[in-house]
Image (cartoon, rainbow, N blue to C red; front, side, top):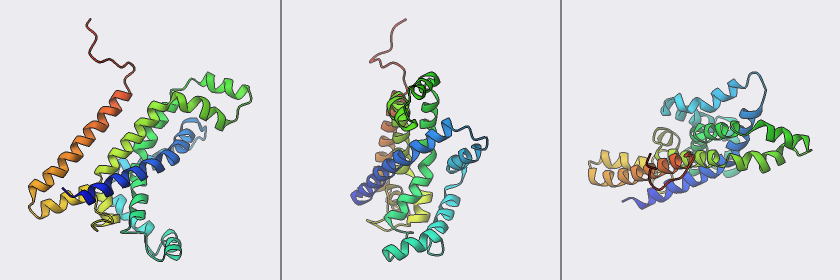
Length: 225
């Protein structure tokens, strides 16, 4: 078992999940409550990673982070090294490709909040931020947790974007999915199987949590009819 790749993968997923909670909630709130007639352009941009091939998305992220881009030059002037093939570059790429997995469940949950409660809060003089924190967020916590779990699980298993932007540097950018690919290339099927089983088991647990959170009623056993 490649514990270095496993540790790096979970570290990456935790950082990306935390960032997506900070970034995803404002985006989801705007998508839900904005009345801008052209907001479907923003919805399309957020959902783009769902339909783009990972290599295509990874290529454009690699170009956007490269030393020829404004962001790449700015980062290199601050840090002295380029963003691609570093953990920081991997985090940026992972946030982009996991963004729809966080934003879409949150948007759906915010849309379920009773508009009358929001209007009543505004009538009583509460600001939009206070209304969001005190009313919308508590009533949407299931959707927020679902978005966090899905983005965490998706980050764990991504391969194409990680390979394009992070490469395959052990201890720096080599995640579990890349390590599995390495084992297969080396004909070490037993090693690949152990890590693949770990990812599959964790994905099953994450999906079970997601479906469980979305049940309206928790029951230990089915109720006989």
